[in-house]
Structure formats: structure tokens, C-alpha cells
Length: 229
Image (cartoon, rainbow, N blue to C red; front, side, top):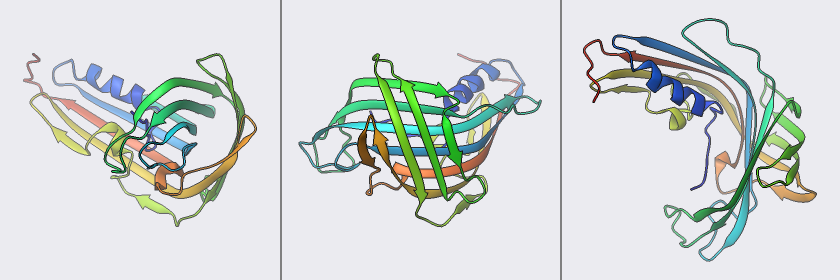
């Protein structure tokens, strides 16, 4: 399975919060996530949709400064972080709808306070320099630069981050959820080196390189007469 994020680096935390808030009858939970900066890169294989028979190693890099608060209170000013994961893939079909086999030999790592630059006003560029300790005992030495290639796209409440957090509006027997993804983004080309080897982000998949700022508002209302099974 290839891991793709659409701009909510703390999505795992938010998703974990929502079911917990739904456990008490008649409860309303409001989670706000502020993304002061986010950039993502995918590279390593011949292409994001590589030909059948290709065996390769892909790397996924995210830099982000995000914070969240639930049920009131100010959103904290968290530091920048960088996340790196690397894994093998085997492509078995030329059909882009057939996912490759993987991840193989998966390794990941996270580092707080890397050296970051980020143009939050125009989303024209970003960069990271970091030595990230990985789960397999290695170190990923990453030098990456994002250079915007598209006009700015602005989403009122229906940004691509909904791919991570669920539909914008959902109602079931127990919960009414309203998820709003206010996102501003630009696509980019990412170049740099990984452990001294040069790389370039894929050109056949737009989210292989992009930058954003955002604000996510997640409202979760548990129905008062809900009986959980």
C-alpha cells in the first residue's frame, strides 16, 4: 500500500479523537487544525505509475508545521517537523488502477526542528535540510527544494484533505460529522539529494510535489438517542 497524504499530517491524531468523542450520548466535539505550512515529495521509481515489471524503491518526504485543538482553547504554535519513509515497490500491471506490491523493507523516521524555509505568503518555494534517524537504524540525509509550477488553488471548505479525514458531511445512526478542509495549495517540482544521490519528484502525478497552508474544522455531533452496538 502506498501512503499518500493530502495535507493533514496530524490526521491520525484527529481521527483517533473523533470516535472517542462519539462515545458519550448527545456530545458535540469540535476539532480545529491549523497548517502553517506543509510540503510533500514522492520520488525514487521511474515514475509514479511505473511500467509492469518495475522493481524500485520509493521515498516519501513531508515537512509540516501543524497544530490542533479540540473543544475550545487556542491552537498551540508547534515546531516544524520532517517525516521520511522509504520502501520497495513491485509494479505488476501497466494499468494505473492496479496498485504495486509493497511496501517492501519499510523504514520511516521523524525529526523535530529541521532546517526549513517556507514561503507561506505565496507558496512559491520551500526547502529542508535534515538528517532523519530511521526505524531500520539508518539515517536519511535529506536536502530538498520545492519550486512551485502551478497557479495557486484556494478551496473554501472542500479541499483535497478530505481524502484523509472522510466526507465533508456524513450522517449515520449515531453521528453527524461535518468536515471542512480550507486549503490553499500550489503544485511543485521537488529536487535535491537523498544520502548524496540526486532525485527529482515524479512528473506524472501532481501530488508528487506540492505546498500548502490550511485550516481544518471538524465538527462531530453524537445523537442523543444513539445506542452503540
